[in-house]
Picture (cartoon, one colour):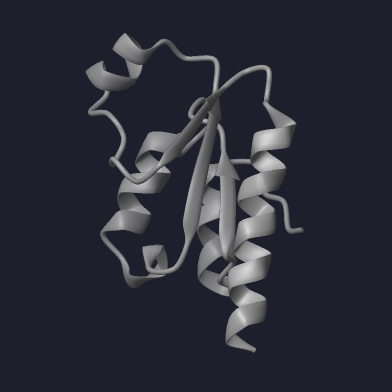
Length: 99
């Protein structure tokens, strides 16, 4: 598990550490989650990276800011940890199948 305090740090960490899963909020200082996802989508770093968004933003606000790609998993706060764990477990199982 690697953490980042804001979107800029998150972008740097993805480029440096190449994780399998990124969990991000949409409201962050500096580079927000929507901008972060757009930058990743325009790069090769998005390939193989599963993105989960956790937010308190309303759907209309997300759409007004350009929306999210259709393959992004969106969870509302409070975080449904059982569902989040299932996503992480699925990634671990897929990765183990390739080893």
